[in-house]
Image (cartoon, rainbow, N blue to C red; front, side, top):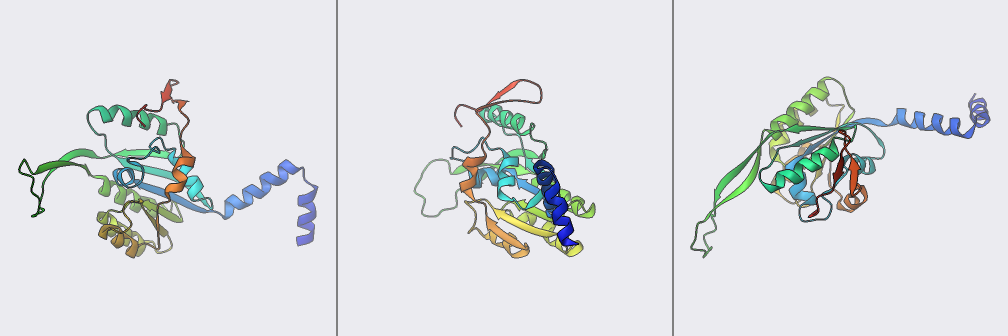
Length: 235
């Protein structure tokens, strides 16, 4: 029987053979969904690098070549000021990718006070840091919904945020067959929050920075509106 199948395969034109083989390999691939904590990813992987113009779909297809990626959820928030123009340009580029869906939370500046006792600075010790509101809740809800819908066999979570630990635990408890892999953005692998996520996931890895440069958008591309989208000059 096996010999007969091989003979039938060899009798097909080479293109049909390749298509059939790719179809069978695709059927064997595990369905996966990617969840990206946008601010965590930005500050951990691409800030202060030349890799901000990142094609997220291309990147994760390179990273997860054995997966059949169903969807890439990108959770973020719109910033303010001059950065917003660059950010919206990037959102326009992401909108051209069929697997990407962007979910927006809220962006706020959180005021903190320097608590370093040895600090000799005599001026204002209050400073502001950007903070996303709602992203952890949005990610948790989407993971639970996808698990309930049996939308995937694997979940790929890109974050180092300990607020996501309860969501990962609940998915594992209610849907133990779903494998959860956490990728920690490169600047975060030794942080306590990342450690907590590593402990509850099935697998954990540091997000590989070497692939970032291989998955960049071209300098310009045509957006879904038909207009040309250009990479921000300072990127």
